[in-house]
Length: 400
Image 1: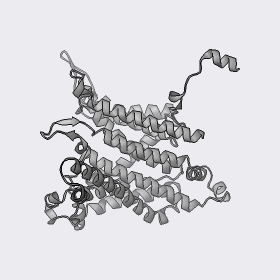
Image 2: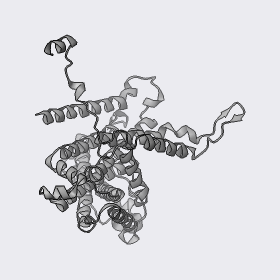
Image 3: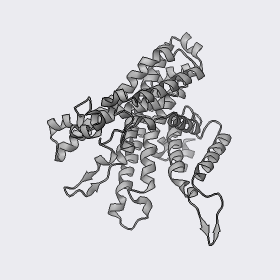
Image 4: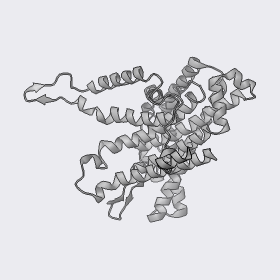
């Protein structure tokens, strides 16, 4: 009963967050004269979109590394699979020849958006429904493709442990990136060129016939998808499967003695983590408005791993909190350090292009030194207190 009540409170908390995001993104249209930070094109909304995407990938990595104890570094590879699957399946059919002009067209002649457009119509409300259903189905398939490849490589690599597993999954991601840039696969992956022209976050904005934006949803969409996926992961962690994952992390021998099938649960955790990483890859493609293999380097995996460590290995809310802080510092708050500054005729030393990353690295070192277990450790933020009815002090004393 307590767990179900907690889940309901989490659901209402997510609902309030989503409503706040819609209000924040559209407030400048209703209240003119607000600071530039509330402008939809300001760095604030860039940070919110990227942080929402990275939050899902960080939580999916934490499910594997933090809750199951499997040290995997293949997250960028699964994101790549998700990004390409989404892009290939949602590029409109009439644009495929333009996108794949170097290879005489795409091997996949259809588009999910066009297929649903034949059913619901391609204009007006029907066009919006077709795009939403097409993108949703493409994202689910993006996760399924990533999960399928995780299932295939899981048989050999999950028999490895610790650093060996990390090296094997990292190697898989690098091999995958090289294969997707292979010119022979050009009719499918467009070779080393980017795939673009598919629906992005801004495609979900509600516009008037004149083209003017009535309601902006480009920040709401990644928050909505990420919230649903993270909620599913949280429910999984709190289930019997999640308890089995934690027991494997704590002591494999004891877990096996209690009847837990080690390989089965490791594979399950690996596939589920990769599934959500694939969805995260699709969201990342929507964020950058293209899909290109060279973007999914090992550096991206290290970035996600750093976020997980900073937030706390084994803490979902820690991963989310660390993601927003990390992205805000790297993409917004420290940007002024890259620009030269003059006070009168005096030039402030050190401020130049690239100095931001020096300060950012120092900040990360300080956090790691003073928070050795991460910001949250293995704890979670509990919002249940926000929904509790406070008991007056007099009544509490009488009860005692």
